Image 1 (cartoon, each protein chain N blue to C red):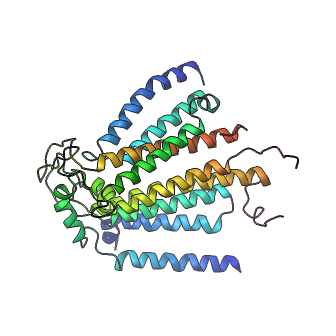
Image 2 (image 1 turned 120 degrees about the vertical axis):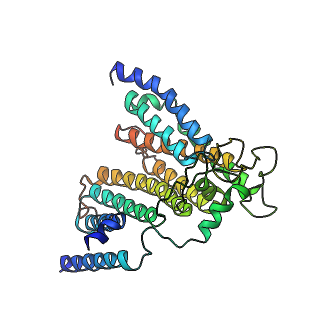
Image 3 (image 1 turned 135 degrees about the vertical axis):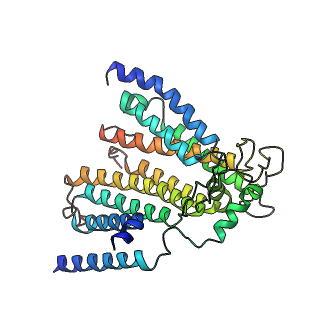
Length: 92
Length: 150
Length: 118
């Protein structure tokens, strides 16, 4: 019974993805872009860097990089916390 | 590992360090930046762990030092973001000033390193954070299977 | 029909990878295979994100010694960079939890470690 519902869910999701990939997304190669055109034209004057992707990551979208640095910090702390060898039991 | 592998790993680590630092510091001129350069140096540290064994690397990369470097990288990132608080939180306040403040000519040009404003400092901070974080995580995983702990 | 598939080939590849990743996540019971399925799913999402920003005959969005041509969209590439770093971090955390489960229960079957014992 559970197998039947799992297969049904997978097939419905894949049909939706195939139809969505060909009908609901803009045609491959012609994206609508006003914000990106503004960033490409003005990134050398406002941010002063030749690398437009670097300027987007650190200057126009700096908050996303702050969130990503926080996630990296939390994950490394979690790894160092989980992988501790067992401590000796203390007598209370 | 055998003597040939240990000697080659020793000599190659110098080139990996120089290449990783080049990718980090030229992040505003060529493709690259903080995250990519940090991953390059962390993979060099993984090469050293495979060649020498995790027990010997643990004597040089202790947990206190790695935690100190990673926390200082994160704090430097937030500190540089706070300095432009006069206008907005992440304001690029060094464009036009004397440190890293040149403005490149519009259109394709051979790149100049002293441009970019705040971006090279942020690249350095994120590079330090990624080096310490990824090396610490891989060292902890390698030590736990041997029975010891970090 | 085949011309549409060959014309939009990166989108077809992203859909196929999503299907493979979801199949592994639903129907397999070994814990290491489930971690591999999560990684394949995140790879398909990254491929889809980069495909959305392509322009016909475009060049890389960097001004140093750039050739002629329009530039592809840079914001989508920044989102993909963030996604890759987050995927590495969460994959390390998941693998450390799998190591703990194997050391405490002795098997890698997800049905044996489902009940929470007291």
